[in-house]
Length: 262
Image (cartoon, rainbow, N blue to C red; front, side, top):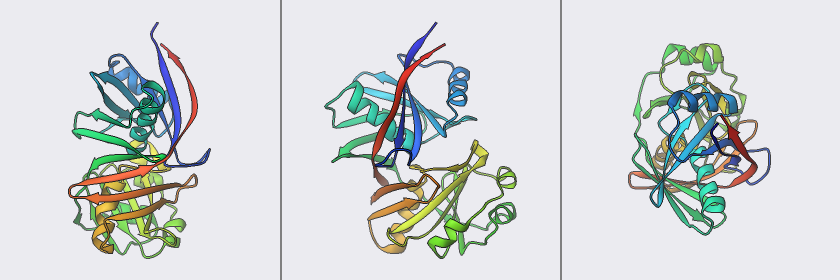
């Protein structure tokens, strides 16, 4: 029987029961892809991160209940909390190696953790009919990033009022759909829908802000912005565009710790 630590945290929040829950499994070596996928399904959270020590640094992979993904912000933030506050207390930075996204650095920024991720690039595109039918409200414009559609709406209320048809949206191309608009008390707001990946609505999506940050930086003429994700749990992020990198900062809170036995 194999046993290894499991932590669950809320990311991009400063209060309990808000933000985005993520599980972090600390391994000595990779388990099989099948076992890691089954653990993620058993955890039934939007993301489970698996981390393995690699010299003085760490390797990381992320799984939703349905599939492995190339990048996840909130589970990386949660993993950083585990490494810097529990496994190696006193560390101020941590580096994660990934298969497809290169090296990801995270540093402490006061009482927050700041992710250093590659910025996405977008191009204007035609809104697919299936997404148009699924969203129920036409956006002002549609763009495509690395893996997600970005839909621009006029107001924060437009974002709050969205009630997507997830059955239809599940059949759309891409990883998911980002809906965004100017914020009333932040620079911009968003929601993220990804039934294609087994997540109807993600509470707070760090990786989506690698798309949102360069998008809003270009529109607002700012490099540092405050953002809010308007899911029922809600989340707050501070985003900075620096060249081809996006810095995304947020808080994390430990919810539980335990041990998995297989």
